[in-house]
Amino acid sequence: MQIAQLKEKFVEIFGEGEARVFIGPARVNLIGEHIDYNGGNVFPCAISLRSACVARKRDDKIIRLASTSYPHIVTAEIDKLEEYKNLEWGNYQLGVAYCLMQDGHEICGMDMLFDETVPHASGLSSSAAIEMAMGMATAALSGFEVDGVRMAQIGQMAENNYVGMNCGIMDQFASRMGKKGSAILLNCGTLEYEYAPFNLEEKGLRLIIMNTKKPRSLITSAYNTRRAECEEALRELQEGCDCEFICDLTPEMFEELARLITKPTNVKRALHCVMENQRTKDAIAALNAGDIEAFGSLMVESHVSLRDLYEVSGIELDTMVEAALKQEGVLGARMTGAGFGGCALAIVKEECVDKFIENVGKEYNEKIGYVAEFYIAEIADGAGELVD
Ligand code: GLA
Image 1 (cartoon, protein in one colour):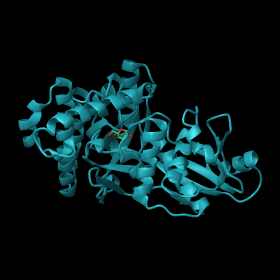
Image 2 (image 1 turned 30 degrees about the vertical axis):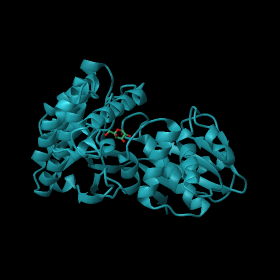
Image 3 (image 1 turned 90 degrees about the horizontal axis):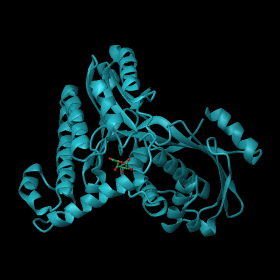
Image 4 (image 1 turned 135 degrees about the horizontal axis):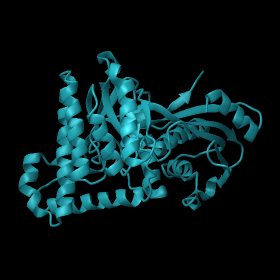
């Protein structure tokens, strides 16, 4: 929904008066997948698909949440926020409010209307988008400030401890800290980060997001299982070396230490992490050298590893990426985000984009039966208030 329309809708639901608008962007991850919770380097950026929150302060201790995609209004008491963990909708928002309070902030009552242009359950992190819009709105209306990195951590805490998704920091970090025209090289072990210009347009290229439209279910449990497997592998690796995270190991170190991991599945998971971390570093070096072709090849290697070693892609993502790689003018393609369906990315020459979308869409539909959606990614700024 357009922002002007959204403001009208807010007035319809909550009555006349001033309201403020806060945006939380979705994200894509260019490379560095499933290693944020293993202390690895990731390379995401915020995109213009977003969650928007129109919000107004209330004088009592009540939060009311409405949505353009959910038919009911959720009413929550600020003093009982730990009680709403199992809501059908609204738990991401209330989780953020709860974690901000746990972090020592006093929050005010609020009326809020949420709207998303980022497709739900598409792997573009609609949840982080909602969390960051909520966090920014809550801080602004309540009259306190939260450091950007801390706000990302609050969002992650809400997912881990309130929603029950044991995610890493990447999505919230990208949504909060994103910068137009740049991707973020984030070391998830230290939280050190730097921006790297990612202007494909200048090179006559486009970043295409390809949505498999696969209905995702049970993703939280599959994701949490991967994370547990990595933790198990790490504990065994630590018997042979002094490392804090799997991604502290270089490929050479891992080769020597892999024998410590007892389960073959866990060896594959850890190998993916170590190599994916290396690939991310190589991809940044390629980018710095202006070698997008090499960057694209590393994206493909990343996909293969997520398919064969980490086993999170699936027939839909694999078919989409295979179809993409057959097309003219394609420099690289891979799944992005948690996987198990969701979206893939491709870097495509501008003049080939229309044909690319047509051909990939057709082949995917013939083989899988779903109608794929395509978006041209626009790299956007991180979360904040929309001031007109
Ligand atoms: C999800 C999680 C992130 C990250 C990715 C995979 O998006 O929320 O923390 O682990 O999966 O890279």
